[in-house]
Length: 274
Ligand SMILES: CC(C)=CCC/C(C)=C/CC/C(C)=C/COP(=O)(O)OP(=O)(O)O
Image (cartoon, rainbow, N blue to C red; front, side, top):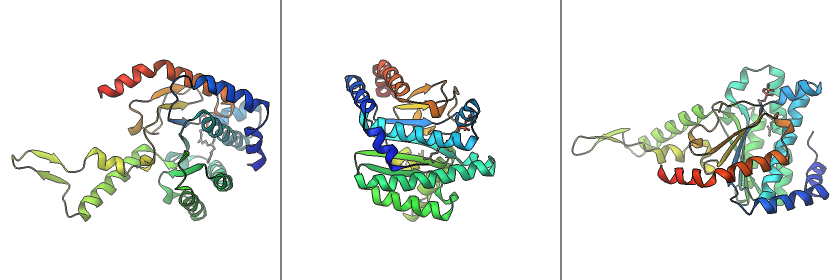
C-alpha cells in the first residue's frame, strides 16, 4: 500500500505551501522536541467507512506517514508511535499478520527514504518476538540510519513499558554482575545503599535513544496509557482526541501543539521543581 509517489505528493503542491505557512506561525511559540502517539481507532474508522478492518489499518499507517512528514516540517525532532503492544498478540491472527505486514512495508519504505539521509529509524520493544525476516530488515535499517541526526522515528513494536523496565533491570543487574559488583551493598555506617540507580535503568531502556516525550497524543477518545511510555511520561503534556487515528490530520496536530504552547510555562516550571 505504501508507494514512493505518496511521499513526493505530501511534500509538494499548494497544500504543502499552506501547511508551511501555518507552521511558520506556530514556530513563534515553543515547539515540542518529542511527540509520541497511541494510534487508536483504526477498526472504528473501518466500521464507520464500511470497509474491512485491514483497510482501516492501511489508512492508519498512511496517517502515521503524514504525521512524520508534518513533524519534520514543523521542526519536531523525535516522533514515537505505538504500533503493536505485546498484548496485541492476543488479537485475531489475521490482524496480527496485517500489522506485521505493514511493519515490513514500512521498513521497505523507510529504507527507500533513508537515501535522503534524513531519518534515523529505531524499533523499540522486544524484537525477538518478531519473525526472523522482520527482525533482520529492522536491524539492517536501524544500523544503516544510525548516523542520521536530523530526525528520529521510533516505532514501538512488541512493546509494553513493563517489559521495557524488566529488560532494563535485567541488563543493569547483568552489567553489575559482570563488573563483579553485587546488586545490594552496605556503606560503612551499615546504611542500605542501592547499587542499581535510576540512571542505570534509563541507560538500558529501549527508549534510551530519545528524550522523554513533550506531548503524548492518544486518539479514539480514550484516556489510558495502555502500558506505553509510562516511565517516560511523568512530565509530558497528555492529549486525548475524540477523532479516530486514520482521520488525524494537520489541523489536529496544530491544535495539540497550540494546547501544548498554552501550558508550556506551567509544565516547564513543574519540571524544574522535580
Ligand atoms: C509502521 C506501522 C507498523 C504502522 C502500523 C499501523 C497502525 C495504525 C497500527 C495501529 C495498531 C493498533 C493495534 C492500534 C489500535 O487501534 P484499533 O484498531 O485497535 O482501534 P479500535 O478497535 O479501538 O477502533
